[in-house]
Image (cartoon, rainbow, N blue to C red; front, side, top):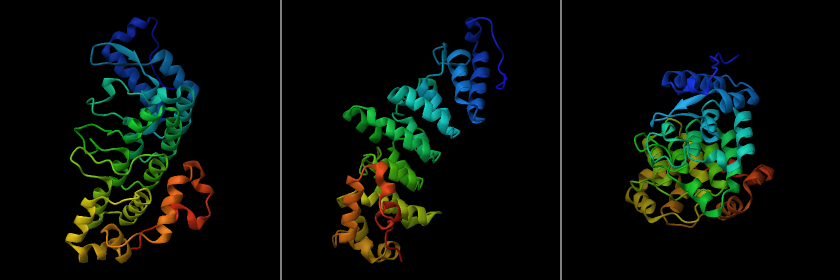
Length: 289
């Protein structure tokens, strides 16, 4: 067979941890090699198993297969899993796929970390099938593992931290909250301003993320205003006069920015591309000198 797995005569043969490791790697490699969906599903449902911490061999679930599709950008397989299983494909994977229980929304975190904006769009469209409360928890849950750099951050926060403007706009346009901070109280806006001050390696993408974030923030929190007012000359040089005065609470946003905020919050995410070019949030930039 193309994925080079050994065939077994009895299901009991898979009870060996070594055999599970072999077939798990075969499935990983098959997704990486972008095998057809039918082949991957045949493997997932009939041939490959992974070893759990409790000493049991289990088949890969749709949420676990979706994580593999995200890592390797297998868009056809991701589309199949989300269309076939809907929100069930966004459930928690088993413990062997997570370092700790803190990882509440691993699919959003993985999509942002690997910059899989195409699959992220499919995930967010499928998330419309959640109940209202469940959807909010999914969008604004703190993903990642508490032991890594992305732990304790929402998908929006992670998109800001990694300067992923396409992912950030998708998340915000589908209703993710721009205000939720990490467990230490650091917000997405704090994160972006810190990158601006430190001179991010990709300042253009950082500024685009800042522009997108502010489109979905009707109000700027006091902590940000205090931070900017503490060193006004520095922030004026980094942000430009108009943006500085707005963020520092010294002047309201311009009428154009207020209109853009209304458009961004009211136009359905899937219809943003139909807007005239001069109204698209994708064309919005903070004034930067």
